[in-house]
Image 1: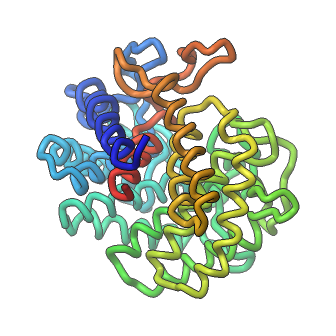
Image 2: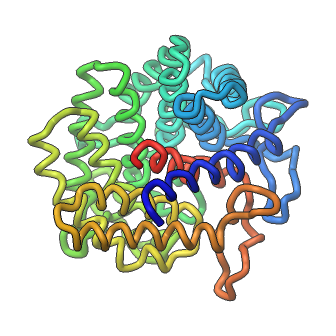
Length: 389
């Protein structure tokens, strides 16, 4: 497949498979915003709770589609998502965002998970990029200030995983029941990095630039494990690794999907930051993460790992200096994309299956859309291919 063919295919997947599904199947006409769940058998659950991460990612997706494709239906969906998020998920009393809402939009779980606040910034900034809506940017800046005021540990240098509604310590900090209960995690730091990168694109505040450099240093000197080339996952307050619970994705103490995702997000952050010296210092870590992920990434079965593999190896292809390296990385990206086309796309009902079972059939036990199944990794893959190729 040529670059032009891959770009055209990605746009078709984006519009006909992903955006159509979320526009037609997930709009909550009774309570506003979007439904919380469609299961793996394509059955809608209108009573399901509504997650902050899901709704921030819906906002980011339709804002990105508006910015890149300039089509009014996508702008209408993005505006719906932005209005609902600001009016329902942002805590008007204490700041930050609620972790989840009831189906009717009332607060359900009011804890402050740094991961969710980061995605709120990511989505609101993308909406500003697409529309120049100042309310969205102002909301993103306030959330940045909430994270910095309450979740940044200036002593041990890092971001606290979770706090109570009023920003007090909380016993259970986990994103999900599968995770280690660590106060510092690779996953949350990755998405704070991603959110602050997007914020710095449009708001050149020195505080954001400073924290981006802090985050990059954390990745290079705290999270990156030079012994195996992967990122370690869970830590305590003082950055001591917690090894009791492996990744729910791989059952190892590392996650190849996050390794390849971090490889390109780190480079993106440095390009937006405009620090060429730091970029050159960090590129070896990016390459090492991509190489470490290569050993296992294409043996995974979950949708998001394949989406990140496509972007990550296209990024490495663009970085490669010799034809052999270019060919290897292009072939890795193409193999991941072929797997998506063959096994993960639901051509009948839209969107992607969660994963593929060992017998080659689609995983229908996990959601098609839900708390953790969002139009983010797959739509972003398409956006990146459209813009890069």
